[in-house]
Image 1 (cartoon, rainbow, N blue to C red):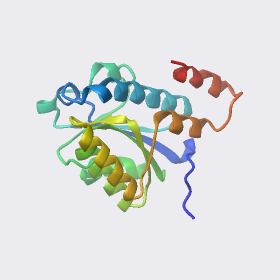
Image 2: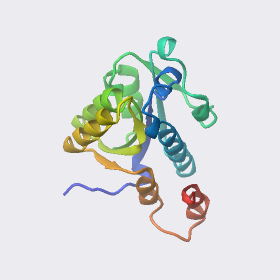
Image 3: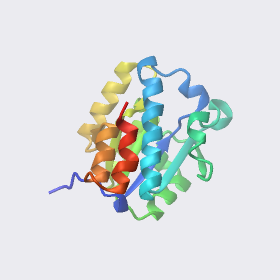
Amino acid sequence: MASFLLRPDESMLLVIDVQERLHKVMESEMKDLSVKNTIILLEVARVYGIPLVLTEQYPRGLGKTIDALEVYLRETPHHEKLHFSCYRDDSIRSVLDAHTRNTVIVAGIETHVCVLQTVLDLCEAGYRVFVAGDAVSSRRASDRIMALDLMARAGALVCSTETISFMLMEKAGTDTFKQLSVLFKE
């Protein structure tokens, strides 16, 4: 039976293409929420020592990673790519595979292009994939909704950022819980 549990020591976080020119044309309802939730995932990953992989799709044309995220990414390599799927880029695939972790938590844009193609490839490659459904966005809500459905049908688990975070925390009363639970008190 497949495991639906998240464990920090088996997980890595993949943040896909949250770049200036892409971000500003995202659907208004999800635009700010997806960034807020990506920041939460970055903080959870930092606290648990979960490796982070960050990608940028053709940054000369689409700009750099947005400033709101850069604050959390100062020491993180930015992997440039041309393939829509991160996993089809040799260098990014090598980075992911080198971590020897079997679970990838995914956030980013656009849901129906780079996120979708990456998730499908990761599932096919045997990774357990958790998509933070409220930390991804597209220009159109309909594209986002259909892509999330397709990812779930392909075997990815689509969850909220809060669900992912609390699965990683496992229990209340710990110092880590106290440190991270404040992120959800809004």
